[in-house]
Length: 217
Image (cartoon, rainbow, N blue to C red; front, side, top):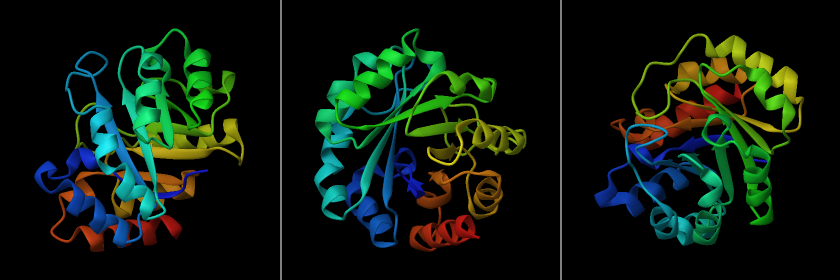
């Protein structure tokens, strides 16, 4: 089970990627989040399995995990590549494939933890038909960093936690900083993706520590 803050390298300086990943790992991050976008499911295009491969040894040697968030159409077609590159968990969107059970089974067969994500407009009850190690509640519309946290996410998170029970991790992604992390934790979240709030801060180490402290209450 994943838990804690998960800095998203989407907001990192790719010219200093190894340095910045090392910085947040040293600050206590146990999860590095990789946002993969294809220009179809969401408008932007970001990174692929090569980015995972580039940081895999560094992250794993630090005892941390790589969490891959596939914001792409037909994610089941890319699971093997990301698993081979070093992903420890892979999350797919319910809206992105007609074969959600197949996609989750492919992730499990590849030896990774399974994650299922829902967009802000998708009812939380959608996840009740599947079993996964983690449920990701998007707290902004997917595709861009630096967006404002959607207030409707708090009651949705509470409902998600009711639906999935205590076992799966519940991840939040979008507009997460110290203040919103605390509120999400109170609503049942256990994994907190933070991109701009970490890598866009003057002191990323202090930002990681502040969000971690807030999430722990």
